[in-house]
Structure formats: structure tokens, C-alpha cells
Length: 461
Ligand SMILES: Cc1cc2nc3c(=O)[nH]c(=O)nc-3n(C[C@H](O)[C@H](O)[C@H](O)COP(=O)(O)OP(=O)(O)OC[C@H]3O[C@@H](n4cnc5c(N)ncnc54)[C@H](O)[C@@H]3O)c2cc1C
Ligand SMILES: NC(=O)c1ccc[n+]([C@@H]2O[C@H](COP(=O)([O-])OP(=O)(O)OC[C@H]3O[C@@H](n4cnc5c(N)ncnc54)[C@H](O)[C@@H]3O)[C@@H](O)[C@H]2O)c1
Image (cartoon, rainbow, N blue to C red; front, side, top):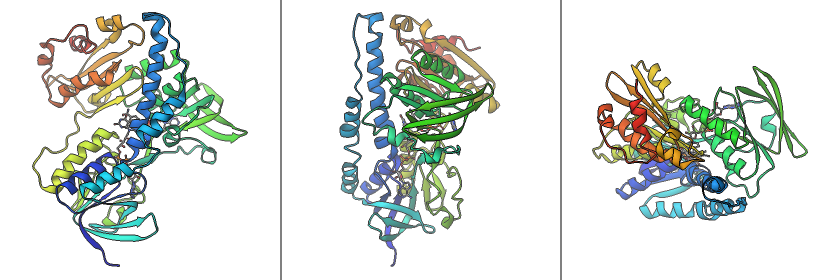
């Protein structure tokens, strides 16, 4: 069958792909959008949105438990059914993307539920849900936004067990008695704290030396301290070597420098990183390596003539806001609109544990590895007036990383209540390369959490 000619084909509609397809269709292009699962991708159905509803519930429980220290008696009786209902009905409409599909069609795009694969330059073969194959030729080109799937560590026996990933965890109607979380990154840590606050006995198994390793070590240490104070068992520097499942129980074997551990649990959640969905995308038909971990893109998100990539597979930060940012840059390139190229010197991120960890730009180590002349400033939130008055739940820190030669911040961390919000200030400073001298001479409202930034800047040395 001959190929159907259109302007643009978007393979994978994560947050960025959906936005790009919508924008291109609204700009008058003939657009085909293909997704093998749900339009909108991981974020609205299995990632950011459902997990932040989980976090909202667990934060409310924690605040009630802090009541006796600040305002008198209160009792929290956690009920997971409330969280489950919000996710099932309000967030995901029972994991149904009809609203998103209709929105995209209303913008003017043709939408396929099916697998899209490159079939040569500007060629895409779509295997639709009913088994048909439609081939498109894209005059302007193809955008790939295929995202990632959970990585499963090569642990003896694990693949034969009914382990969970984030996709199972967000759909839970009932909680287990005990849970081992494999992986202490953002997914593992957010979920570990949520489930623990809802009464699950949680152990986090992290094979590196610390939790949330993409963040500053001071933030990781504080998070571990908070987790342990809430009864979460944290095992760092351990290697999961064997897993089995029988009679409703998981049995895990772990190795470490201090010897071995044997763990049992009702359930195991694997949150040990992500695998890019690049292996079944037909990359070899356009001369690219299908086993690559990322697709190399230029500052307009071009991979090659007529091919753009956006989202997690570009390796510029696996976050919804990066996918959306890239989507806007790529769309401008496709429609021929002027605009700023993509820059990644101030990528912000927030891990929604309590305390939240907000980070932007480089960590101290990354700045040193980049050969910069580094000065750091540090303060604990508890030492600020706001941290002191806040009392329980007020743990946190601010750390700033300065390129001393240029006198600008190249990275910063804001950890604490609303750490991700305080980050906004620091993100502007890093993004706009505001001179540290300017930051030092402004007025910080008293007594706010963000006023602690002034103390961290004073500590630069
Ligand atoms: C549990 C969890 C929590 C998270 N929390 C946050 C958070 O709080 N904040 C944040 O910024 N980020 C968060 N993230 C990350 C965020 O979800 C992703 O960065 C975001 O979804 C952007 O991904 P993407 O655009 O690359 O594509 P994805 O969202 O992964 O979507 C890719 C889409 O492509 C489709 N697809 C793949 N291959 C094909 C193919 N061959 N043909 C057709 N369709 C295909 C898939 O079905 C999918 O719909 C979280 C992730 C997880 C897992
Ligand atoms: N709040 C947010 O913005 C947010 C929340 C969740 C996820 N995300 C995004 O999704 C991405 C994926 O999250 P993630 O937490 O799965 O991945 P990750 O790669 O960030 O963290 C995985 C962790 O698992 C550990 N690990 C790997 N193999 C292991 C093993 N065999 N045993 C024990 N530990 C092991 C790693 O050391 C690492 O710390 C993140 O990098 C982030 O970009 C963002």
C-alpha cells in the first residue's frame, strides 16, 4: 500500500509529544500522532500526577501527627481508599485517555492508538490496534517522544516474581503489610515515604552509597535521617543478588561489604531506573543505533534532517518540564518560528518527599568535575527564624554552588517544607546568571523559608 502524505508524524505522545502535536495541528500542519498506550504518556497516568496525589495524602497525615507539638490533639486514621479514588476517578478517569484523544483531534490531528516505527527517512509505519499497518510520509519530518519504561535489574529470580513497578503502585486499591522498595531514586523515595505513612512496613534497598544520588550528599543524608525517624528501614551500599516468591511472600538476598541480608516482604516495588523506549522504534532504518541509551539532539532538538527527539530519551533530565520545554523549542523549529534555542544549564527538579528536595543546575561535585573554581554556601533551615518557628517538619537546608571566577551561581539546592517552591528563586538566579553580589544586596522577606538563601550566600567561601 502506498504511503499517505502528511506534514508531521509524532511517535509517542508523552507530555511534550502531545503538546507538540497539538501546537503543530493548531498551526495548520497535517499532523498524525501515534501512541501505543495512553495519549499524555507516563506523567498523567502513572507518574507525576498520581504520585503527587499519593504525596498529598501522606503529607496530610504527617501534619496531623505533628499537631500535638504545635496545636493540640488530633488523630489521623489513614485510608488508602481516598487516595485510590482520587487517582482512579479524578486523575486518570480509570486510565482512559478519551479526553486527551478528543482534545488532540479537536486541534486537528489524526490520532492512532498503535505502535509507530520509523521506516526510513521521513517514513513511519503505524501498526494500529486492530492489526493494520498504515505508512506515512512526513513532508516536514518526524518527532519521536517515546519515553521510558521501568528498568528491571538483572537479579537472579526477580523476573519470575510478581514484582511491582510504578504502574502497579499507582493503581493499588489496597496496601500490603510490608514492602521492599528496590531503588532509592526519586520514584523509590517518594513512594517509600507515602506507603510508610499509610502504615506499610517499608525497607528501601539502594545499591549506591546514598539515597537520591542525583542530589547533593547533604540532602541525601537528611532524607535518610528523616526516613529512619519515621520507621523506614534504609539499606544503602547493598546489592540485591537473588529474589523468589512463594506462598504470598517475597524472599530477597542482599550482599554488602558488611555481609549479607535476607529480607522477606509481602510485596516488592522495583524503582531502579528507566529503560528508554528506543529499541523498537526503527532507528536502524535511519542509520541510528537502536541500542543507544539516548538520542543526541542539537539545540533545536534535531537528531538529523527531518527527525526531532524530545523528552526523557534525549537524556537532558527525565522530567515533564524538560519534555514540555523541548516540545516548544522543536515546534518553533518545525513551524519556522524564531525563538531561543534549548539550553540546559538551569534544569530544575523537585523530589516530593517530605522534606521536598529542590535542585537546579550543577551539584558541587558536578561543578568541580567541570573544572570550575567552586565556592559553596550552606545553611540549615532549622537555624532560620522560619525553620525555628515552624518546628516539627521544618527540617531542611539551602546549598548554593558558585562559579567563583564568574561570581554567579551554577547550582543550588533548597530542601525543606515547600523546597520545590523555594527553588523557583534559585532557578532564576542560575538561569539568568544573576551576579552573587546582586543576590547578596537584595532584601529577603522575614521570616520566610527563602530568607535562608541569604544565609547560604553569606556562607560562600
Ligand atoms: C512514578 C513517576 C513519577 C514521576 N514524577 C515526576 C514529577 O513529579 N515531576 C516530573 O517532572 N517528572 C516526573 N516523572 C517523569 C515524567 O513522567 C517524565 O519525564 C515525563 O512523562 C516525560 O516523558 P516523555 O515525554 O519522554 O514520555 P512519556 O511520558 O514516557 O511518554 C511516552 C509515550 O510514548 C509512547 N510510545 C513509546 N514508544 C512508542 C511507539 N513505538 N509507538 C507509539 N507510542 C510509543 C508511550 O506509550 C507513552 O505514552 C515521573 C515518572 C515516574 C515514572
Ligand atoms: N519528582 C520528580 O521529578 C520525579 C519523581 C519520580 C521520577 N522522576 C524521574 O523519573 C526518573 C526515574 O526514576 P527512578 O527513581 O526509577 O530512577 P533513578 O535512576 O533516578 O534512580 C534509581 C535508583 O535505583 C538505584 N538502583 C539501580 N539498580 C539497583 C539495584 N539493582 N538495587 C538497588 N538499587 C538500585 C540507583 O542507584 C538509583 O539511585 C528519575 O530519574 C526522574 O528523572 C522524577
